[in-house]
Image (cartoon, rainbow over all chains, first blue to last red; front, side, top):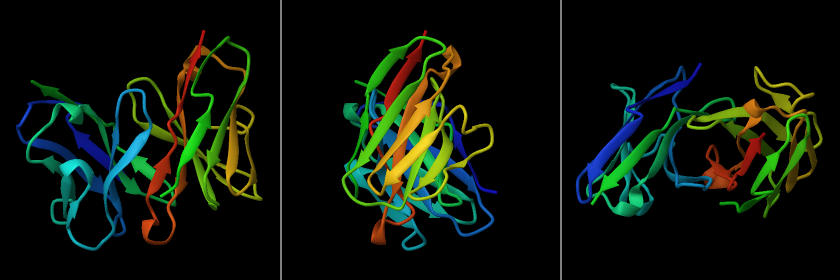
Length: 111
Length: 116
């Protein structure tokens, strides 16, 4: 069975500060991992994905994530937060043709 | 990538009634998925819909409550039947990527349902 755990339901950072959203996964097979973002009153948008190629994955809007097998982690980072980054972020692992989502982390950005 | 639209974008319904949500994709896809996102919660898969076969439902979801149609490779509907306030959620459809985008999913904007 596959599962995803997102540490911290709510993260608050100041504008310009580092963003770090944590995701740990459990999978009996090599996983495919994803980060999605959901802006208020919108659907989900794919930020980036890991599919067994490079372990450091770059996505849209300056986000990146590093796959660490030894730590079963896929944390999302951005060097400098922008006000427009305020949203909810979901980590997901690919299961039996469907995605299994974490509970989400709401990111707030303070001016 | 795929462009997905959903209708309606939001609705307020009375308990005991039913609502059919439409999902349209701009390209032909084999698998379509329906998710529910309850207030403040993550996404939960309701069912997987393949064209030409019965939808496959996840544990806790039944066809009588959430009947799904998949008449062709670009369209699907989800009906929420005999609604109660507990059905108030965002319902999202998604499709699987193809080729180099395999394994990822693209999501529609969601249908925000409030049941009173």
